[in-house]
Image (tube, rainbow, N blue to C red; front, side, top):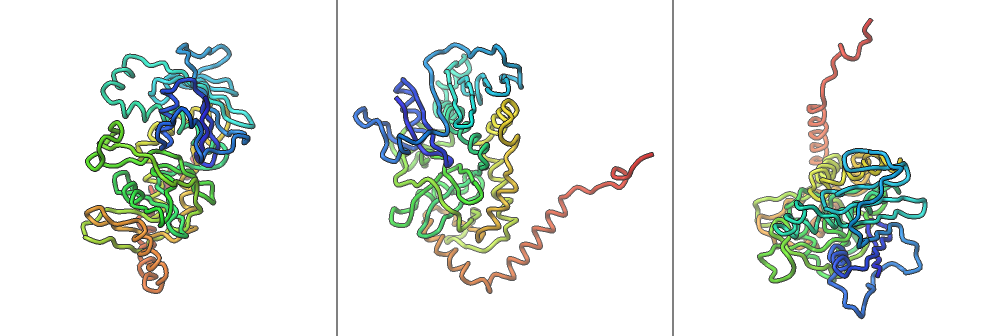
Length: 375
């Protein structure tokens, strides 16, 4: 049985004869388990559309054949057309990755060792996150990169007529704000990860994660004491029109002020590299680039973050000490601030000068002895 979904602007098809793996895929996409009489989702891409990524989960536990392949790095072999990854991302899954001009095909076999079995018993939520990354998320992110997009660790939503991008470190409150979005106010796009193609942000679907203290008997506990819920009314992509850099303050009400694009871009880049969700992705992506000759060895995250920040108004949002402020309320504050540029021109100019000074201060000095030609 197969399952189709849209992720990172691509059509992904997952094939598996195991109900357990199909349920895992549904959870990974933020869906409740499918009843047997309704195997297809209403929001799935058209059946006649050729998928961009095909993931096949095989029942075999045998290792993939390595004849004709040469070592790329520890646990990876390739021949320029295909790559075999053993224990991909520490998940206990072996992957055979085969790109073609039409699509990326990923074949997976479960081959857990004693360490994987112990982790599954001790931390089942963390084990499932590794399965999701190796099986669905990382291959899709890499194929999107081959086609010119870059990953960004941001939350995104449509709020009224705005495409809102939320940047900030993990734990600052992005998921809480996204969860505050009422149906009449807009729609969520992604809770954690997106790809940016220079025009649109495309969501990587994931479940909504909420504090376990406010949710009872939802699902297994995930890392950081959180549980998962399906999203309702999610849309696949937005065209950004506001970039909000979130900070956590101590006041009772949120405050908003403009920031220069350089400051916002730095928050985008730093947040992406600091994200635990992407910690294993960089080696995964580089290994596939090395083994296939496709895509960048490293995504152009800095360049694209700067492009995004220059294209939209950028504002810093100082969140109150206690959660409770709605995302729609913050967007209203931002609209008012953007509509009064004369009151903020001096601040933006001062902040831009400070950002430039900080960049110069941290740039390494170049020694003239190193640049001169020695005889």
